[in-house]
Length: 377
Ligand code: NDP
Ligand code: MG
Image (cartoon, rainbow, N blue to C red):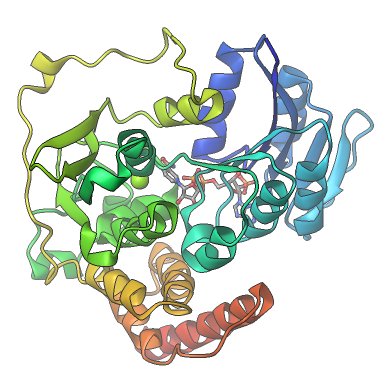
């Protein structure tokens, strides 16, 4: 059997570490050719000594690091160089932000498999990704992985798709209580264990908004046919509604290693004793609620960005990045995250033709968001 030759971008994050855990379980089937870190250079030696990877990319330009044992590449060019190596056939993108667009496009153009966890890249640059007709794009985000499997051979029979959301830790909070939420409270997710940025996005429901846009670019359903349902147990990850009113659902425990493993081996299903079997009696019951858009308005704003089209999705993700960071730094309140994104929304329109145009617009948006934060904090 041919080995998978993997480049893992964002190896030190929540998704990156869980991917390494899958590689650890299948050493005979997956070869880690190279990986990237942003600032955590201490992890380079550790990952190299365990997996014997030949290359490491350091994306932050503020970090000095030298090694005799491993080839070090640098920055965005380093990511592109790594995914272009002829020995790499599969690339998993689990970096934060939107730097992932360059290696994603490059790997697709070179007809490789891209396993995409990094949703912000698709939200901001979805049109560019859609235009590349080579390579294979496999989603890693759990809802999209579920839908990817459900829609296979069934797209033409599907009326609409449903993304589930846990509702986050503040699902039942009043508006008053939401104003008083601290970063420590928001970082405690009830069902998923994830990186800080996406955990805050889950609490505001912006994560679901970004995922609606991600689903649009992956599966090409109109915005009104991409629905969101709150499902606090986080066992059903996606559903499709078929034309005859039958529904199909995808279920598993909320463990990202399941969609990561599927993406790595797709279309093959492999057994992994580390992944717990679902105990339906332990779960007992499923609940479903409509999202409350008055308390979680970022979800509605994301739909509006999708309806307006390019470049609105790029604007809201750029503004949200800045707002989430400011909230984590205790500069603004939890409910101000929405105010920041809404503020830039109406100032966002601009013609954009190239990736560089989108990047410079996102930079401008970030500056606007920072100025607004200065004013309100
Ligand atoms: P983490 O914050 O845990 O990890 C981020 C990774 O990206 C780290 O390896 C980090 O390196 C690196 N990184 C940070 N900043 C930059 C940058 N500016 N340029 C390049 N690399 C950078 O994030 P997650 O693993 O939670 O999430 C990664 C992506 O996957 C996000 O887009 C998220 O939305 C998506 N995702 C995550 C899920 C989850 O369960 N965590 C589920 C579905 C999607 P270093 O450690 O060296 O700083
Ligand atoms: Mg998700």
